[in-house]
Length: 278
Image (cartoon, rainbow, N blue to C red; front, side, top):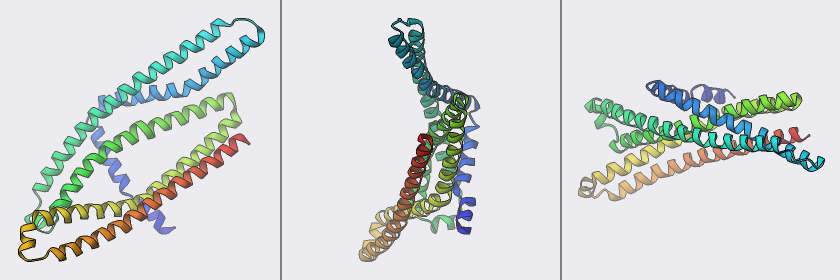
């Protein structure tokens, strides 16, 4: 338990998130546009079931009373079309904004990282794998792409939908809203704790081995003439095999922890659904 709490406290995610937010704040206007578009998209997702239910009620009422209820039916239909159109537009704006901001961030990170690495001491460069350094920079650039999409479009939007749906459900059915809200809070807390305190530390170690593989391969191949001049091909094979074996062990642990995390989330959802049905 102590190790789990230490991993959660020392998780690199906090540092990476702070780094990402600092880059977001370099474009406050675009960030506001993205957030507003995500809010509109989430609102559309929350209102869609509401007006779908009203459309079904209007059609059922008309078939039961043998009276054509065109006004409620048409109103619900037009609202559904408008909501769907709004969702398409807001998602387009969201993705366009994220694309522009991510490309700017990736360019800045590449330039700033290269600027800093170039000015490290000669001793540091002599004792570091050039391939590993290149791999770290390139992986960091592309990690921003996934992180921006995950945080802004997935997590933030899902959080808004969760809050809106729970509030709407609680307004119409307080007890059900309480059950869904408390279950959702538990699910979010469990996901947060397992992802950052259980999966992230193993993933960090696996990524470090992945970087070492890239460095070993790049340096061995780029210095192939020197390796062959000393007849050290077998030694390089053994060295790479040891690095790959360590990488395989750490990557297996990382993937297994991710699978356990996914299974735990699935079981939690089953319990939550059973509570709602019961």
